[in-house]
Length: 249
Image 1 (cartoon, rainbow, N blue to C red):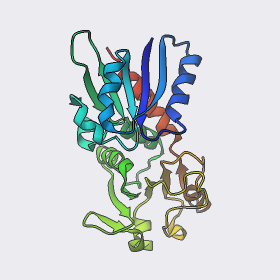
Image 2 (cartoon, rainbow, N blue to C red):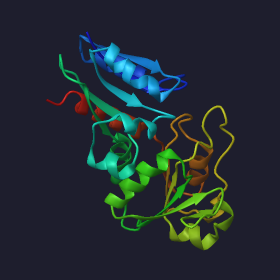
Image 3 (cartoon, rainbow, N blue to C red):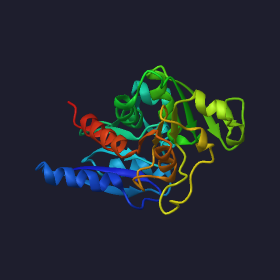
Image 4 (tube, helix red, strand yellow):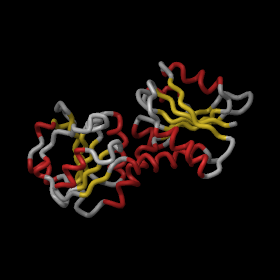
C-alpha cells in the first residue's frame, strides 16, 4: 500500500481527504490511501516520512506552508517565487535519504479557474487580505500581467487599508479577490468592509472561500450585476495538479 496525506495542525474537516478517497473509489484506483497527519510541530515532519517509507506525497496546510521549506531538498519555480508550498513530492529509495520537492498548486488552481472569466477590462485587481493565500494569488496575477493592489486592515508601504477604499478605487479595479477568511462558515453573515455600492456589471468578484457556496461578499457583487466565482473549482484544479505531481515518473 502506498500513502498520501495532509500535514498541518490542527486538522479538522479536510476537503483533501474526502476528495482523494472519493477519487480513488470512483476511478477504481487501488493500492493507495490518503490520511490526515496532524503534527503539533513542524519538527515532527521528518519522522513522519522516515517512519513511513511508503508515504510518497503530502499536502501542506496551515500553519506549515512556509515553515516546511527548511525540510525540502528542492522547490519548483512557482514555489520558490511564492515562498510557500502546499504540495510535497517524496521520493524514497532503499538505502538512500528521502528526497523532497515542494510545489505550490494553489497558484495554478486559482489562475486556471479565473482565466475563463476574464475580459479585456479586467486589467487591475484589488486583493482583500494579506495572509498566506495572498502570495499564491499575487504570483498568478503577475503571470497573467494583471496589476494589483493589496488591501489590509492596516496601511503599510505596500498595502492600503479598507478605510482607504474610495469609489474611484473600486471603479478603477474591476477584479476584486477576497483572500481573507471573512465570511467563512459559520460566520456567514460577515463580509469584507468595502463600498459595495460602487460595484457594477463590469466587475468580477472572486472569493477563495467555498463554504458557504455563495458568501455575503459574492451576494453583494451579484446584486450589483457583477460576475462572481467561489474557490471550489480552484480546490479541484489544485487537487488534480497534486495528483499529477505525485505520480509523475
